[in-house]
Length: 196
Image (cartoon, rainbow, N blue to C red; front, side, top):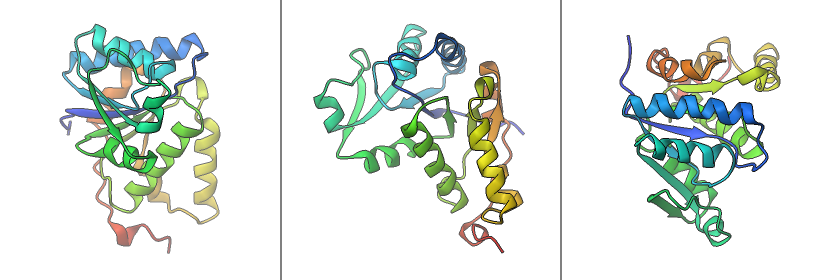
């Protein structure tokens, strides 16, 4: 059964020297989101995948909101054309606000910040705090090492077999939105987080 996705949060990199193939994939994602009237929440940056996402969503006539701690605004990291912004006290508040009102989370390739945000969201889902789809865009095997680590967590009994149902992996940008719309319903609660 397909679910309605009205708002997504996108985790992605701000690196100004991001390889072109990742930027082109963002173009495809942005077009799909705008064409389906999906609002976008992101980290507010003006460079890298963040900047490209905002550029394209705005170019295609979509709606995008940046969420950024004040200290980042002070060093001028904020995207200049994004009109909807929430500036918050710190990174903890930022990550909390990312998921408020969000129907699905999309993790694109990125660095330590993207990885940290993704793993926190998986943890929140495991604890029953964020029951919505988490889509990992594994472009060209980017997330293979992380997925192998998560599989090892299961093998070594730090996670249960059902925990791998918390996320969906896709390898093509054009499949991201449909993966979110058709992700399995996560019905686990806090009591199910423990490995027994």
